[in-house]
Length: 218
Image (cartoon, rainbow, N blue to C red):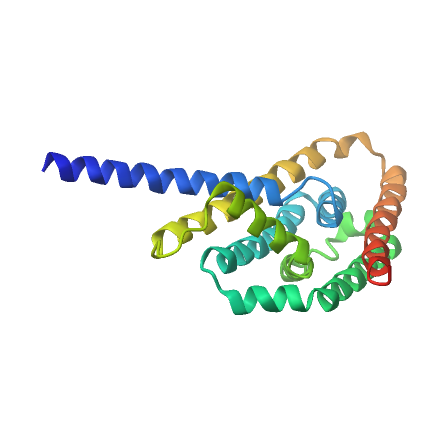
């Protein structure tokens, strides 16, 4: 009975350990800079913190999906992502240019007053697709998993499931912190400054998109 209890404790400790390692991975793969971060910050400042967090939720869900593919060793999917990375980057670059253009043409004062563009599904889906369209996220996950020794053959379902759950938790936590920080500084900007901030954010988002598109021909 005592040995059984010790084994159970050890297994529980290992389960908790792999979950928190997944959280650390999620924090690593969800950087505070980049196109997704720029969109989340812009949506937080213009549409509100909830919309920014929902956008981050889309990115975190994509991170979890890619972590699932890596942890469960779905080689046919991973091979597809790597093989078709040119098309994925093309989609990501075009999507960023589209989002940036919409941001520049939008009127933040009207958005705040009337709640225009507060579409949960659109905000979630756009960031989900944008994250999936970046093969670098998958390659980063694979590298981090390998570096931390987190991919284990014949580990069953509990180990990779906890790892994926940890990645999602860590990624979403990073977006909550980022959006909350952006909301804190929102009061520093007047309505007129928010208009220029909105346009600047749109230009930055388009710049990321153009960089991705130009990288396809260089």
